Amino acid sequence: MIYLETNSLDPTYNLAMEEAAQEWDQPEDIMMLWQNKNAIIVGRYQNAEKEINFKAARELNVQVVRRSTGGGTVYHDLGNLNYSFIRPIDYQKKLDLTTLSKPMEEALNLMGIPALAQGRNDITLDGKKISGTAQRIHCRRLLHHGTLLFDANLEVLQSVLNVDPSKIISKGISSVRSRVTNIKEHVSPEKYPDMASFWQALILAFSKEGPLTRMDPPEHLIEKAKMLQETKYQTWEWNFGKAPAFTYSNSKRFPGGNLEIDVNVENGLITACRICGDFLGLVELDDLENALVGCRYESAAIQANLSRLDLPLYIGSITEADFISCLFER
Ligand SMILES: Nc1ncnc2c1ncn2[C@@H]1O[C@H](COP(=O)(O)OC(=O)CCCC[C@@H]2CCSS2)[C@@H](O)[C@H]1O
Image (spheres, rainbow, N blue to C red):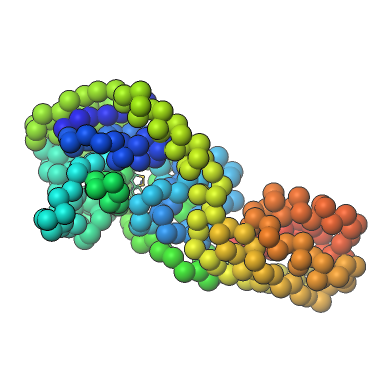
């Protein structure tokens, strides 16, 4: 098995490198271990608006990136280690998805960590989740990847993923919230004092299951990864535009009156919008609604569109900031 490291902490590059490796036409299995600096990784078929507390994510400087596999939303930081296994698939043989987490379970057990592969995509320790996994078949290869919570900031994890979904009606896949724990809390500090020692021990455990050929990603893989990073994982169109359609509804009471907003969002863009309320209106609400249609559902884009309207006090006794807060309040 080939063992690769990405030499990067950038989630957009790492996900691109993983995809490039899956498209790499060579017969051997590939294993990758990699880390992202603070990031939220949403599933291919998910709606980020429903999963993420954007206010907390912004304040904590956590980047949001969509991945190509299905499943739920997870949080990554330097206390979390990601693994990827890529192997050619034999279409004649039945693929048993329930066994995919077994090699990781066994490697952790070899390391003295009594982890348990549970259900279809979790690995647990002491009844709590330490790893979430997902898979994708692409270019006749199976990618099975997962997280390992070694020493992640679980407070940040909770705060960025915690959102009240009641204002959003959406199709798409919802995350399955679990109780999580860090591996470090369950092993003696002498054994794995830090992430580096845990990482090295994991490589060693896998090399006991079969020979690992460690190599740096070849130049053509790096080139492909850079291309995919630029054209896919760094783009708004992929990260937000790929979201399933949703409707957002909110009503809020301000000193200047009540405001009620409903917006439909498709491919990340506002396709319809209804605004009403009992505030003192100095602008045609139709104009306001029309100005929002076609706009990206994100506060900076909406702000830019509103300022183009060029109307002082355009919604009367409710300020622009009130209006925007109502549109994005969770
Ligand atoms: N880093 C991490 N590891 C394990 N579990 C997590 C993590 N972050 C959040 N969670 C918990 O899992 C649920 C979501 O579980 P759910 O089962 O819905 O989704 C997943 O597990 C997806 C795993 C994707 C793995 C990829 C591998 C490389 S790039 S990301 C969330 O609400 C939290 O309770």
